[in-house]
Each structure stands twice: as C-alpha cells, then as structure tokens.
Image 1: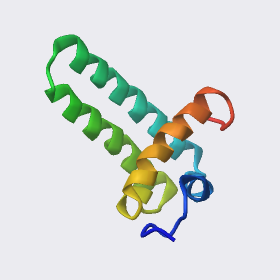
Image 2 (image 1 turned 60 degrees about the vertical axis):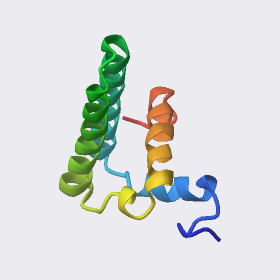
Image 3 (image 1 turned 90 degrees about the vertical axis):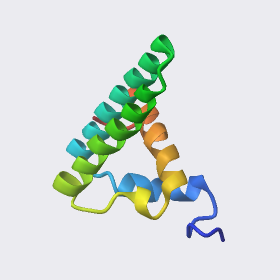
Image 4 (image 1 turned 120 degrees about the horizontal axis):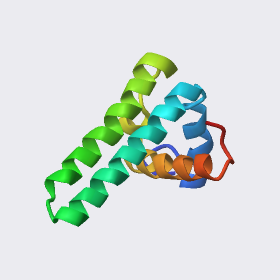
Length: 102
C-alpha cells in the first residue's frame, strides 16, 4: 500500500467524492476550476507566468471555502495532495458530462 493509504487513484476517488457530498462545495470547486482555467489561458495569452499563481490560489480558495463553510471537513489536499489534485479535475469532468450533479 502506498503512503497515501490508497493503492490507486481508483480506490481514492470514491473517498474523494464522499468528501464532496454537499452540492455547494462541489459548485465552488467547479467555479474555482473554471477561474483557474481562465487564469491559465491568460498566462498563455500574455506570456506572463504570474497568472499561474492566480490559477493556483483561485482554485484552492474556492475549494477550501466550500470545505470549511459548507462541507465542514478538511480538504483532502492536506493528506492526499496528488490524488486530490487529480480528483478535482476528474470531478470537474464528471460534472461537465453530467455524471455528477451540480
């Protein structure tokens, strides 16, 4: 078993979804991811890497507000940073495709 307590992302993802049961928390994650994508686009368009810092801050800020004020739990990022980062984007895709409700 890996140091994260999960053998794979496939094992981690159901846990991750359980940590995002509150719809407002999920919506805030989605908004933060959209804002982060916008900042990444700005970084590419302007060739200014400072936008990448904005992408990182905005993505986590929206998510953490969702966890602390709506989900009332600690973000998975603190214990599982790599799986959590991947989980954010898989959940984003699942919300876009309708697999997970907004």
